[in-house]
Length: 236
Image 1 (cartoon, one colour):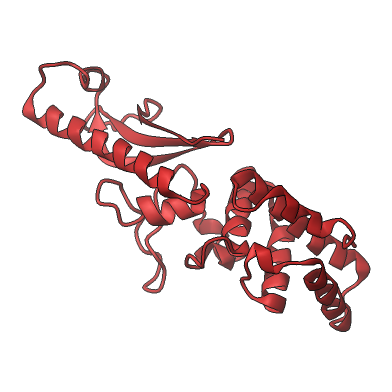
Image 2 (cartoon, one colour; image 1 turned 180 degrees about the vertical axis):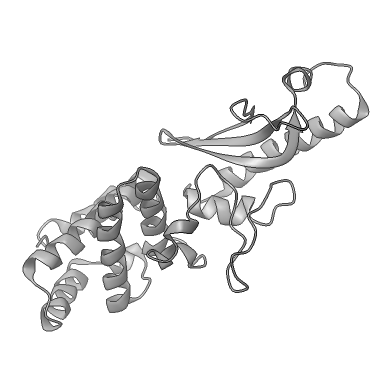
């Protein structure tokens, strides 16, 4: 499924002093939409004039920069092996001078990209959200993106299950590639969990979450559908 990119005027929130609205980059993928606030604010009248042949120099400068954002964004998305919001935010939005950035929470924390959802309240219980980008096609990429989606949908209990699944599997095999997770891997993982006193029920929850992550990775185009057959006989 293709990723669509648009520049929009967010008229939901007027800035009282300037009487203008924030201009945002809208990115949609698999019916999920996120917005990223640019450094530009415009009135409705100014936004409608962007495509006019004659505009003042200030508005022309803004128009050129917005076109640059859209064009470079489209190129960046096109070059991505598979689109993942988390990777897009880290690679394209974060530290981009044409976007407003969040302030640092601490010296060791990266500047987070500004979108319509604030994950800061969840950092304490979901430290995985603060992890730096790993190798492409690793489980962390999809796990983190999926947990973010669950938090946005306020499915906190489910997000905890995926956090525990990710933490457990990473402790066993590291931030492994999807291709490294085979039927043999799952058998060894189950044995490792049993030796560490985990019940069959707990193991089942962890593996079902991993299977869902495989399906999500397949939908993103990160892995082929055949890879999902890893769970054919290895389900717990």
